[in-house]
Amino acid sequence: MRVTPCQAALAGAIGLNLLLLYCAWRGPGGSPPSCRPPRGVPGITVLLRDFEDFENDLAGTARSFASLPVPVLVVAETAPYPPVPLPAEVGLLPLRPAADRPPPLAHPELHIRTRHVALVPDGTRAVPGLLERMRDALEGGGAASNVRLVAAPVGSAPLQCLELRLEPREWTARYGDGAPGVCRAVEGTAVLLLRTRDLFALPFPLARPVPTALFIQAAFRGWGLRVMPAAFPAARRPPVSPHGRWKAENLAETRRRRLMRDLGIKLEVLADGQERWYGCGKETVRCFGTVHARTPEYILAGRWTPPCCLRALRETARHVTGVLEAAGVRYWLEGGSLLGAARLGDIIPWDYDVDLGIYQEDVGKCRWLAAAAAGEPVEDAEGFLWEKAAEGDFYRVHYSRSNRLHVDLWPFYPRGGVMTKDTWLGHPQDVEFPESFLRPRVPMLFAGFTAMAPNNARAFLELKFGPGAIENPEYPNPAIKRLEQD
Ligand code: ZN
Ligand code: MG
Image 1 (tube, rainbow, N blue to C red):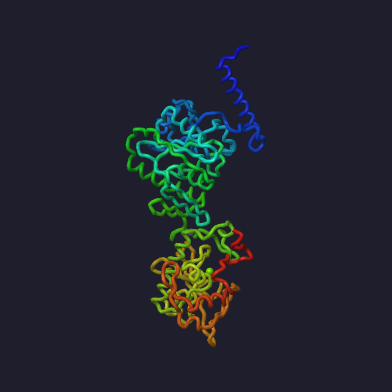
Image 2: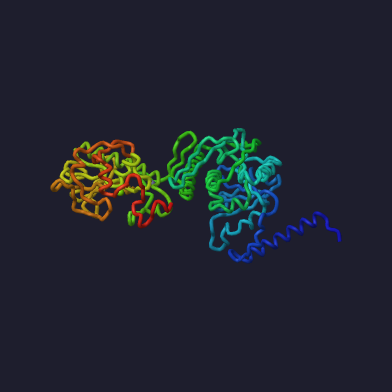
């Protein structure tokens, strides 16, 4: 019997459908690995993910690529609303789980059968053969290059190649100018092509904004990015209304914040030096919860103090020392803060508060401290909250009422030439010391300003923390976690 190519293709398609039906029937978790086509069928599926529900070009973009023809899938939380007149062959992949449906991404191969996917921004027009050339650029690089992403510009502006360095311990992503050929990210509107299995091996495969989400996850994995010179045309579209632009910008900002939270990034430093902060601020809560056993949760997670928290701590410390100095309250850097000042002139990069000692008899000289001593927490003119600590006989100045990053003020009084106090919390630095360390106090660089410190900081610190305290950094509670474990 002779089989025409058409019949062969039909038989193949039926076979694949039966296989996929079988996979679906086995249900999530039940399918053996052999059930998943390991590499998919040759071809490229276009995913339309980055678009707005309003004033979009979804129908035009989908139609343009569907006519190539390639499979086109609209990927969205739910079906676009108001409905978009999509060509019949364009599918929809709703991402929001629904109780009566299988989990949306448990089996991506049920939706995307091709080996490659292209993430196409709204308002792009297809060019015959260009997706295939992108795929060839991806697969032709050789294994050594580790190119896993290919980008092609949309419109007439070329893509700018960027370097992207991740500092997960510091919650930071740093962009820089990339040398051509070693891009980690691009600036500009782009179509992004990659292997389907690479995309769905990512923890956030379809997070938005798609380019940022992919570049950062790719950089974590050391994936290379190749930039194509050839461009896709941008659609001629009516200008977006001012209200639409405003809505789009707000949504973009919300998405970006959510993405950075998911990716664990609180600071982006752009190639031009501009900074974008995503962590805590004066109006938000602190990034980490109550500290137990002197070990904040981020240390257990292998990270250091979030940059937003360091910034807020520096600002609070500068404010508090300024107020104390103006009021004539004698204070000095204590504990871990003095250690940080001696070691690097700053807060220790994993510290979670700032500690100052004060002369108890000076408390009444500062109106905020006096008010706190009387029992009522009081917010000063700049929004810092002064209070007497519930944990003992000391004071706490919080960054704000909602953000409880704080400076602790430990009142000491002299007795027979020795500085002592009434509350002892059992910390290693919690010991009496000769008052001579404070006669005189000396200025010391700390957290971007000059603070007062005991004279002979080294002797003071070795008295409190033991010999070699400055040279040998250690986490606050080595019994819980040691620095060398990281
Ligand atoms: Zn923070
Ligand atoms: Mg401390």
